[in-house]
Length: 370
Image (tube, rainbow, N blue to C red; front, side):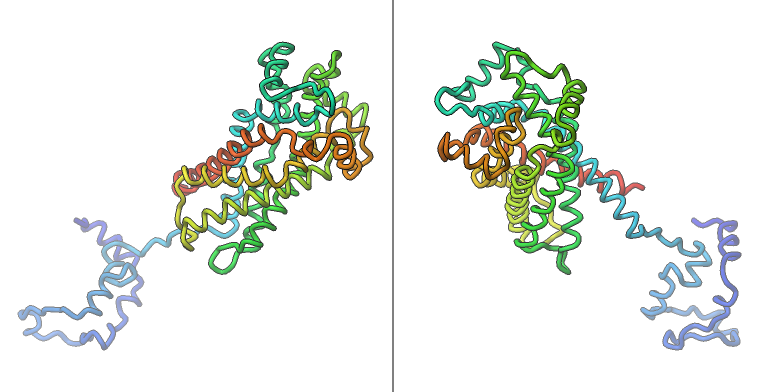
């Protein structure tokens, strides 16, 4: 029940001109002299327009009793953009860190197999042999050699952030991307990821892993290793293999985003606001990862060779491909396929699912309350 004091305070906020204004003639009421009969005879008002006018928050009656309506504070486009960018950075950071920590030993095995360039007497016979020899010579920590470098990589942040920005520039009026646009946005996101995140981190990580294969190791920890690489090779040593890395990473993300986004659109049935179950998101991510493994493993092999400690044997990417094909045969381009099949589907399932989950969590439970 509204108190008299509240009613009087509400009256003070009412514009006198508003109260003095005549009521619409369509309501069948007007200001005029009050007769004695009108004071004693009850009047039943049932006109729908009068009821609607009285119920409106801005009507004189509502203003008199409850005060003027409070305008809802609308978020500007700039604030929304900042929030979405912040969400993307946080989601990408969490997704990337989780994926790297879970899948790193498999990545280690893949790199060791790809670096093994001996065509007649290979150092490793299989993935199991990589684990066996590493464990015998370096213990369980050997399987995580280079993890401290990899976990610093902002690749998932750059990847998803770049994709979101490129997507915003290419969506249609319904907020949807065509298949071609999705592929190109993924290609661009992968190129950004390769240049600004993957190449320096991968180059250092692969050198750290390759260093285990020599009797006298060159690097004694992260800072010593990075300092040694820069001192001996300059920035070229950090950005060694940038061309095959861009080729591999851009096609990787183009394939994965195309597959995942196409499967999501199929599930949403044309409704961009519909949500996809996280279990299905993980499945779609794994499918995208499997497709990318079979289509671009040769580029991954070239990248690993061009970033290893014996990269000086190759003049460029073309010369590297020629030497591998001539000395080791075409199957050498698919070295490491099995560990990639074990790691990449898991990696893409984790990153796409965790990214979507964190983005929704931040949007629905953080920003909605601020």
